[in-house]
Length: 179
Image (cartoon, rainbow, N blue to C red; front, side, top):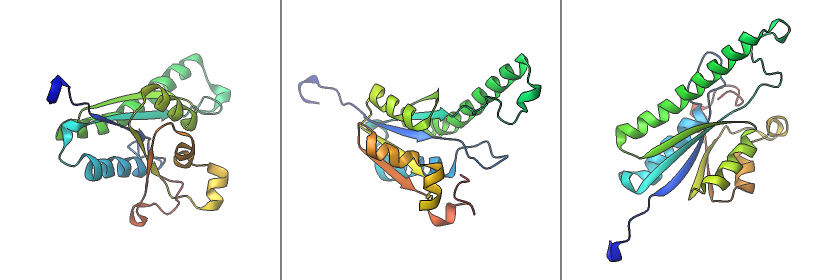
């Protein structure tokens, strides 16, 4: 480059989450869709010009026990639950990092705990990506009232441009809340 300036890769943060479908400990349909769309429409074959930043936010259970009965919990249950959650989060991120390495796209990945809306906004502010890509489950107006949408919140409040990728109708499970 002229004047010795180095090329700086465009940094794309991708919010990813686990599937909510029981017995399916993999990336959600929406996360995979957002990732694949980013590769196909933005990165294309120009892999060295981009760096993907994968953020997975683990949502703590309200009572802290997940599928365990809190009445019978012991201190070892906490250790087991925390270990299981960490393994699931790492398994999720491994999918995206592995795919990036297969095609030669530089990437980073990390896990945070908390409310996805708040954590994503905090991380956008901290990391300052060029833009954020999030998947959307395609909830109807009635479901949005009760479930809320992380993608809409990010569009309204993130300190960078946000691209929301909506699932294709053929990719959606019977209940849009499942992902």
